[in-house]
Structures are given as C-alpha cells and as structure tokens.
Image (cartoon, rainbow, N blue to C red; front, side, top):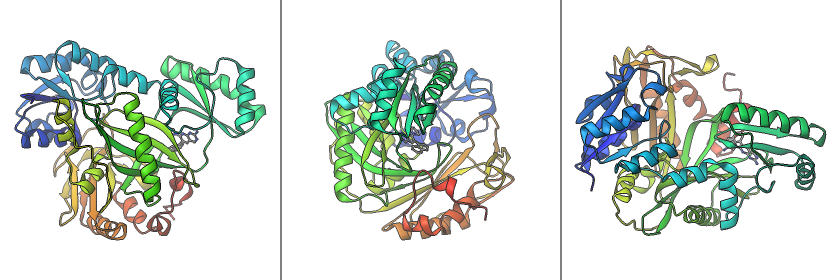
Length: 446
Ligand code: MV4
C-alpha cells in the first residue's frame, strides 16, 4: 500500500480524497495556489505545498511544480481528482517515469480515449454499439456527402480532438454540408490544433446515461450503478441520479455488458465511466469514456455502500476487485450547488460566504470545502458543494432533497439552490420524463 499520496487538486474533491486516505491510514500532501491558502484541503492534509499563483495554468496545471512537491515530500502516489491533470497523458507518463503511481489511467488509455475517432473505432471493433456514421476522419468531401445521404439528415460533425460538447455542429440538410464541414474543421484547428472531424447520425433529444465501471490489474471488470445526467446546461451537469428513471432490468443488463466490453477493449484498470446516448426507443450508443473519478461518483457510492476513492487506491496498489455487478435497491440524487445566479443567466457569483448552515439528517450527504466566512475565489469553477440525498424510492429521494434544500443556508453569494428547489417540484421531473433538452425547453423563471 502507498505510504503517502499527493492530491493534485483543490476544492471539494481534494477534501474528499484526503478523507479516504486518512481512513486508510495513508499520509497526505495537499498542493495549493496562493488563492487557496485558506481552503479546507490545505488545513486537513498532513502536509501542504504552495505550487504557484492563482491562475490554474501557473499552479494546478503546472506539472513541474506538482512533481517537485511530490519529490520534496516523498509522496509515492498522486491522485489527480477530476479536471486539471486527471486526463493528461503527459502527466500520467511523467509520473510513471518518476516512479510515482498515478492514480488514474495509463498514458496509452488517456490518448486512446482522448482522440474520439480512435476511441469510436476501438469500440466498434470490440462490438460496443456506436452511432452510425463516417468511418473515421473525413478526408474526402464527396465521399462524406454520400455517406451523410445514406445515414440520413440531420447529421452531426464532431471534432476528434473535442469531447464534452466542444467542437460539435449539427447539419440539417445536404446544401449546408460542405460549408459546415469547412467551418467546423477551421474551428477545430484553432481550438485543438487538430482539424480532424468525423460524422454521425444526429440523435435528437437523447438521454445522457453513463455507467460506472471498475477494473483491476488482473482483467476483472464490473459495472456499478448507471447515472442519468440528462439535466444539463451547456454541457454542465446540474443534477445526476441513480438509477435512471428511464432504465429497466433488460436495458441495464445490456448497457452494463456494453460498458464492460468497452473497458476490456482498452484493458482498463481503475474506476472509469462509459457515457452513452440513449434515444426514445431505448437504443443506446457509446459516446465517450472518462478515465477519471467524476463529480457525480457520489450517488453511485450512496446506492451501493462503496467508497470509489478507496477502490481507486486499492486497485492502483494491485488489489483484486470482487467483480460483482450492480443491482439497484436505493435511489440517490445529487444537486450541484454552484455560486451562480440562475435568475441572471447563471452569472458567476464569487465572494465571501457571510452566513452558512448545512442540511443534515438521515440520507443527506454534503460534499464541500466551504464554510462560514470562506471566500469563493473567482479563478476556478463555481461549484461550491454537492448535495446528495438517498432513500428507498425516487419519490422519497426527491422529497428528501426538497427538505434538505430548504434547510441549506448560504448567504453572501448567489447560488443555484433556488433553481433546484423549483426543479424538485417540476411535474415532468417528478415523473422522470426529461432528456438533455429539458433545461432549454423549461421556462424555470416563469
Ligand atoms: C451527440 C448528440 C446527438 N447525436 N451525438 C454532447 C457531449 C458530447 N460528449 C456528445 N454530445 C452529443 N453528441 C449524436 N450523434 C447530442 C449530444 C449532446 C448532448 C449529449 C449528452 C448530454 C447533453 C448533450 C447536450 C447537447 C448535445
């Protein structure tokens, strides 16, 4: 087992990782930017090293600084959390070369999944269902036009270097195809330094359902709970829940098996997530694979009594996993509480939290790094906490969430709490009837 883990992250996830390390008897090192010197992850770590000024590029993304912090503190592993360096192949490789265990995917896996056309080709070869489309990168406009006609409009152009909603464009009719392709290639070139585009049939109003998987160093892979993340705004998830209200036993079995196939195709080791688009007929298609712990891992933990960070650490240290697939017996919902004003176009609202009271009680979990008097810096993402409610049924979980949101007091900054309060009362949400289009279609200010 590791002696000391350096946590290369900030905010709630840094604290979340430190907590598990402490319970496992592993020593911890926090890193922080000057803007985060008063953050709880700094206070609760055994050691803390300042790695630079506020800007992420000069601190949390600065590989030499993080590596230096690991070397001077003698850390034998690095946990990257989510975002920042968590899916950086170069960082994973440099850790390897320095004999520091990167608690995440190998450089090869990160690169293989990071290039979306390559990832898709790998999945097709492995027999994972994918959206019908071009075979790899579009190189010939005439051939692409012919393929688009065969697939049928609308089609979607996707940048191979994109992902997470970046570098996508829908083409509704043949006349628009060439111009859209040229523009999309230029945009992708400017944004990612890679013009490569591929094409897919455009799936209208899909659900976003992802499957948590875990794989060990000996080839055992299992699927844990699925998560419905369809409630999003501009590719930022706002609410996640498990099980998905759209799921049934047969579909879970099929999607679980597909997710395991996907992981095995890349010899996946660690915890990861396979994202699928699901259409109204319950057809599902591979979208992306995330080789990191995700923000919404919490709801899976709550329904299966499982510490996913502990599992990551155990797998990285060479332990075997049980390989048992998941069957739901509980329901968990997570609301992301951001320092944003939902009534004012979701404008960020950093600043000092003047008054603070956390909800509690049975089935309520709050993951956060903030406290009364804490100042939310303007340099990073605006998530301040994750409120998770778990109960036997979906109805009870929603009721519990309403109750917990009512108890939650955050003064001094605007938050998304009132938005979530309204959502929990929405009839379509309560019925479980929503797609990724839900937020665009719902006039929540009315
Ligand atoms: C799609 C799609 C429709 N058809 N692909 C968005 C994130 C990126 N991973 C892929 N995305 C989409 N790919 C085809 N062929 C619609 C989306 C999409 C979406 C997907 C999941 C959650 C929210 C979304 C919002 C807009 C578009």
